[in-house]
Length: 235
Length: 300
Image (cartoon, rainbow over all chains, first blue to last red; front, side, top):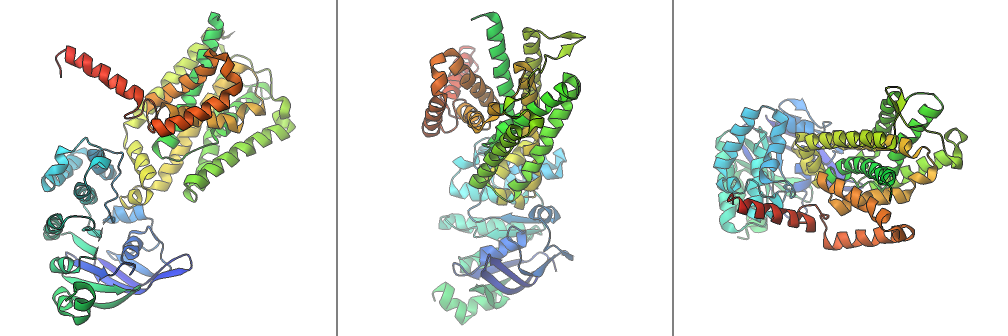
């Protein structure tokens, strides 16, 4: 198993957000985490990245317990995070946004190669190279955020609400990209409110309700599930 | 205005420029606002004053010690920045300013309110420096500070600091050790500021607690914001302009805080990036000029 969560509990101060979460992501798998607003999806993703501390439980990544590690250490181990809304650095140029991460692997030649890879994936970023990231449109920002996460050659990509605020056409193109990344061997854990689209590209899924996992299974099974249909798909 | 007077004004302006370059690294790059930089200024100046007058060291042998102490306190001050940020960090830095002022005022070791006097001009090749000689030294240090700032601004370190300042969580998740860079910024900044303090102590010949009051910290931040946060040219311009303003218009002296306050308010509203920051008034003028030049030469 690439990522394994055991009985994870997270709280903000005295307010408990997540109870006894256990889940896993295998090599080359896309796993979806679906749930309503406030179910704790983003919190769980932040907990895995290390931005929010765990109250209880442990996180295993590639066989190492990472629950006590700093976020930057986890990033160096191969976890990348695409935050909600992209959160690119608005005052830095597009290229600086990308190079920032590349700086950690030092090798100039590798950096160039990675940059070329990102630009071929998102040609629009090449056009905007020296523009400040703050001047990009929402869709372009999202692409930059994905590109930025890929710069570090991650093994696991945590994707938080990548479709939020994008127009439907862009949403499907972003999902296409994620699928292509999966085929290149990157595992993913995504949170989505766009349940049908998310489950369509993923292998398995977990349903999160009020801080607990209430349902899990293969994507096809979940899409057929009565509970999922009524609460998320509106069928 | 005599030549000597102009020289000493230029010396002081250069010293402030070094300090503002240091403040720029902390507040301009990592966006950690310091309203207590007069404390690091004081630590540099007082350490130098004590080492020179009481321990009998020369300017050159005391200089690295004073800067090192200033940097050490800077690193220690950086530690709370890992727990508190934004407004609370500002309050912490203000606190440091008052603590340093209080200590220097209260303890006889630091001369109390009477300060430390008799800090002589440094000697070079056995002869004490003249005003112009000291100006040359200060100008050299300013050049050095400029070079270091410029070289640093081209490194990954600056990018990492800016990322930390803009969005700490996002920076962390990308593998940037934000804690390290925050402290690094404090260390670099207090090193520059300590150097400014040392130079200042020798050029004025005495240090008093009131020289390092909270008002000075406000002035420093005003200089940086006026010139343009996060830019080297802005830091230099702000330091020179706001220092020379009351020197040129003596009547402003008594209303200095009023003028600075008004200027700062106006800058924040009208020129949020500062006069020389991106899109600032002077920045636009310059880019127009260079554009015209380029047109004349047929480049554009």
